Length: 331
Image (cartoon, rainbow, N blue to C red; front, side, top):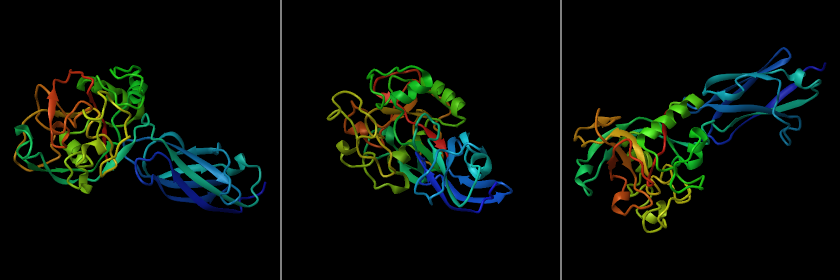
């Protein structure tokens, strides 16, 4: 058997990542006839990924199939963290090694039913509005911690993949937001999704929702989520044709999040209640109540109820064809 001569040109690539770079700090060492690859998987701690390794013998011009003689932190269901290790039994896979081997480590999906998440850096903002209804007052100072939020509303396909059904009134549109789901229905969805994926997904708090809708720490102070011109960012009563539309077809907001204004209203985790004038950190709303908050306006909404500050509420068992939701996860 020929021994390993040189191992260079490590390449790390990421696909469908929630962050700009998921595989970082890739390094290796040769241990006997094996190669030990170490890497960091930087992503939300609640996510899981599929990791694969492939090799090239022509300095990366062409790549073969994914390597099979690998063990360790490789394959499906890999959770994020530092110092992940993959052991490659090189000479089991290749009977001879006569020159330079390049390899790449790849992270795909994040095994969340194709739910893309956007990082929201925490910060402090003024929640509510003095220009709206009485229930939007008083304007008060709120601080939220880092979190991830769904790039889009949960779609009909994503709901069906987890629940096995599609309750939507506007059916036969996989990429349209799911609707006709109550707050209670969503709790069942979350339980099944988190059990299936090992994640800790949930509905956003009302404060997290408004902070993200306003653009987080990148906010430009728009009235709607991403623009002062509602038609740029929202499907609403003037342009929707009285129906939902596929997600992410209009302009995103400053964070790269779509449809936080219009398309469907979005359930939040909070019980509905009056605002406090005191500054708060990570508020979760009242401890009890009779109705849950939903935010953002919908395909049937007007200019006023599509504002980032507007609020609405319904009993947690209520279903309607203009209410859906999106998810958040902890950093």
